[in-house]
Length: 446
Image (cartoon, rainbow, N blue to C red; front, top):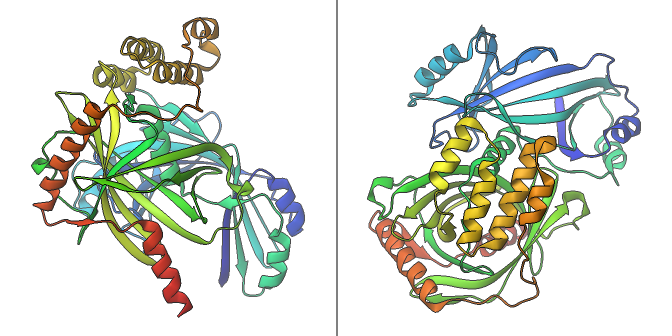
């Protein structure tokens, strides 16, 4: 019987095998997963529908004719159900739709990884390497991300080494908590396809917080049309003056300033530091897992985008909240161009978007779009052409400035969205997640 499970990322899988004194089996497996959802994700945060099969390196990616094993989980309150019957992806989709009573499911993304396994000293070790993610939303599978670090799962059985010995074996390793493959897939899909926009109020956060009895609401009653829907999760670590958000093996830090309320919209300075490795962070004071569904709406008259974030937070206790945030102004023509990119995956589209951002006076955004072109194009990218079109950026040391006309227009839009949600039973709030988490930790001490 399994008595303990440890899951983590590490850049040094060989060191873990050696430290545990276990040799991996000579033969590894190549595994393929396909994850399903609806276009606007509707499955519960901790649930999934996926197909799984073992493949060889020569097998075509996510073959429509291949047979997959179906794995389902409604949410984390029930074990994963694995159906013995193997079926095609189309048959799997139809069976899942009937079982869950869902609308039309679609294969959203797939992934492949190599798995090494080993057993010894009452411990089973599984190590997943080269986990690579592919969007299945276009005409052909398209690589959207790859994990550089290995995933490791260590299962200790009752007759295995004791907890103290296992702690000693793992102490000092470069490791970070795992993000589920489902969530990494959704993250990579969003990073690839999210519509590019420019933050006219950069350096500040504008948000409205709402208390809710349920995260369900009627999108048809919003004052602006829905533009796109994404979902993500992250592990949040809280420190004295900042928080760290971990996803995969990387992290970014967020530090916020004092709050100012303008018509019930909260405004504050926000500084983000990116590019951190998760295992370089100190031990946190508080930790929670945050799941988020993002409903992005568009003011078609101005091209401004606002995000309704539906948060489900888990720190042993759970907490739900909705936030409305300003999320920037669309690059002209972005909706059509990104629809073409999703279908055809022509990377030069990002050069076109970069030129349009430049024309709008958003040179920094233009630069980031050209860098994205190079990243996605790989060896086929024209680095010389990109270098010749890069725009000189402002110094990051300059204090952020706010155009009062833009600020007023943004706040007026956010109030419209807020009022439409208040009419659906939501309630104004100023409770931050840090304050809620403090209560949770305080109650544990008591």
